[in-house]
Length: 320
Ligand code: UD1
Image 1 (spheres, rainbow, N blue to C red):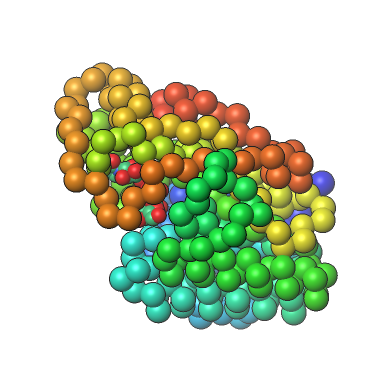
Image 2: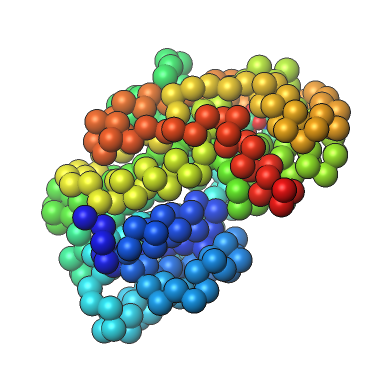
């Protein structure tokens, strides 16, 4: 039961985090958001401005969370569950700045886990990533494939999965790493060249600007809607028996970048010209998740059809 549970959401003002906070509050939970606001935004939680069950703390996880959460615990009682989403989120940035990625995605995360261990938190859900796999040759991608990450980001996410396994086996904490595939939806930031393709295409199309597809556009991805992802997170958070082994969070369906561009342009009235540019260096040509483990473990399957999710994404941008 999730009623009245006290859940800490790190990164709770971010893209996936704020949707997760919406869901937890709607289910009756009490929520503390920890965010350093490097990419998180207060506007993402503006709908909860008057909500007494929500407290927002401006804290960097790499500086430790003990002091800030202690005061809260005196008022609210012990933290029961932690959903750890705070992260440096750019794969490309991690390649340029590996130590920065280690600081947040590894050391910062281990500090959160240390808090959980000392405070005897019941459950930790962790935002891992399909980036842990690297190049694979068999599809759909299963959790038991050998991982060979191609970036510091992927290495640090995979390393934290080992920490979660350790915390489950040695300290008896329920832990659930979730390997997100390509998440999209309202509130995703389109402003960097390394932003998710859907946020870039939706932003450009809704302003009538041209789209550039990298390469021939036949490369595929498993695009999963943020509303489904937040549902998976909350299901995993209240499911029993997380032993630190990961579960893919995707749809099990693959979509080419060509089809994606056509669909988004269609929703925006077909005003954009679609052209092809150079292929991205190191481009993965195919990605699609095997989704059976999440179904077995916590009865999750993605429900939002790409068309519906894209429509919501475009509508959120155009306000229409
Ligand atoms: C993800 C990372 C990326 C990293 C790559 C390494 C995100 C958002 N991106 O890329 O930083 O380098 O893993 O494995 O996490 N595309 C276009 N036009 C655009 C933007 C993208 O055609 O303007 C294409 C890309 O070439 C790719 C697809 O869209 O084929 C998806 O791109 P993206 O959203 O960046 O995700 P990943 O490729 O999975």
